Image 1 (cartoon, rainbow, N blue to C red):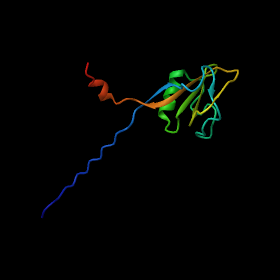
Image 2: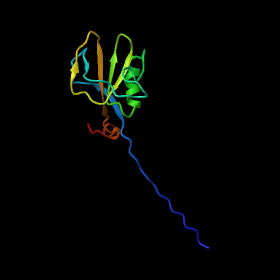
Image 3: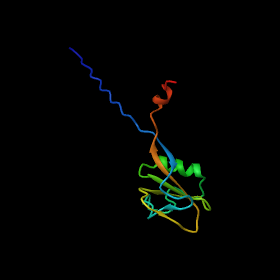
Length: 112
């Protein structure tokens, strides 16, 4: 008898993301429109009483989140799918966009 073993290797490259300031929104304003629906919530759908760093981390871990909107006075963090317009209100907001991180090997192998 002959036994044949076949091994299949699949390589997936996961894209790493980071949060950067949403340049299209003026400081203190927020993305226009409404947050996306997550777990039955729109506003504060990423959490309440969060720090700025926790808000950004929550967006990074939520696949549908493209923009994180943080309301500084109560720590409410809301996920938006897009941010084409901005909105001014009596509250102060921080806005971040999820963007791909440059490949780490490029930084490790930079010549200079």
